Image 1 (tube, rainbow, N blue to C red):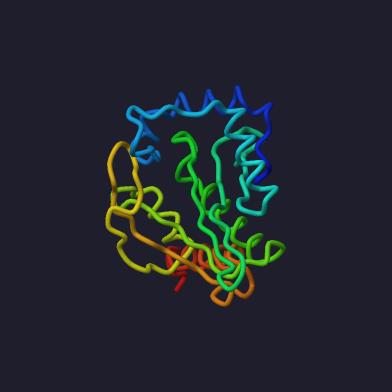
Image 2: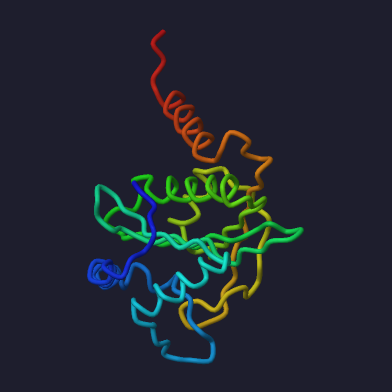
Length: 196
């Protein structure tokens, strides 16, 4: 699994992936409340906008690849400097690779980058209560639950409640990826039958 910048040449693979996963992603898609049905920007326009935000230090947009193929997207957005040093993470992955640990790994890598080279202090992930797959991601990573945000984001045509999860740099001094690997090892060891 690799996180890398989105590129214009990803357009065909990205569009095909989104089309194959239209029904899988629709319940979780942000929608502008003033425009229904929403019009998606072109891939090139999205990459230009995200690249401009990255250049301004406001976002870190990445393609998620697995075994060389584009399988999803992860964006660190809302980067706030000054006394907050915080951001939020949004992500999606194709149904065909969901459940393989790709997105927990991607989120852990992104958080480690944010707490390391990017110099951030706090990362937040907001998830609809009905989104079991995304809730498994934050559960696997051990992110701290902070509460319910009523009608937090406009998703799939309506204002939707979200659960808020967060992690700070102090909570993962060795890095979130290392913590997740340790949790995986512990869970694997606990699930093994005793040799006694």
